[in-house]
Image (cartoon, rainbow over all chains, first blue to last red; front, side, top):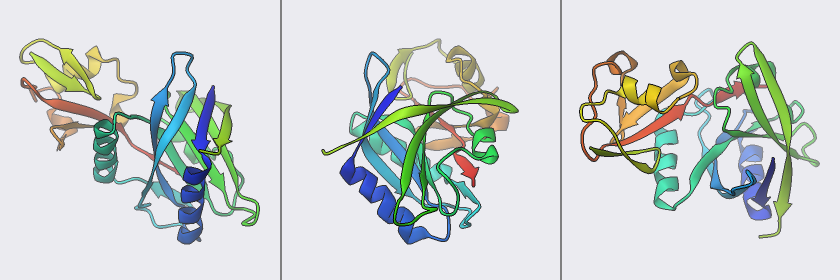
Length: 144
Length: 68
């Protein structure tokens, strides 16, 4: 699946994730899905990691609901979430896979392992909780 | 009656419960889903008894979390 994100939204995520180091940062992504399944991210949400650690993240359901309400008001759909890996690569960890319960979601992971060379990847995760299948998606950063 | 489910307007049976709606909507792994009705979270223990009403707005929210 192909998914696009604007450069400006990528920079928003990056700036927030850098500011939250050493902890993981997280949020939601919203946008539109075309008939061919390709997705465009139209808005990113920078939310609080209620775990406040560099090892985990959780999004408060109240903040999640407020973001979803905002998406509906703007005619957008929830597309998934994003989170940072301050010290590890841009790939789903075992915990990421275990907690990826929404097979319709796109999971963006921003690695800050090399702070001067951040890496953002998109993943689709499905299957049973103890036997997930991970597929890397084609992520394209657009000018605007 | 008409309700809104995840942003889409739908016609459903009068008195439909949250549990019945979860089944009707084929919600995956419902044990990891939080349900809100008109922006109020519904306790999972009440899914079987909470009846929806005309005009209700329902959202299904998957727990979002992970780790390094």
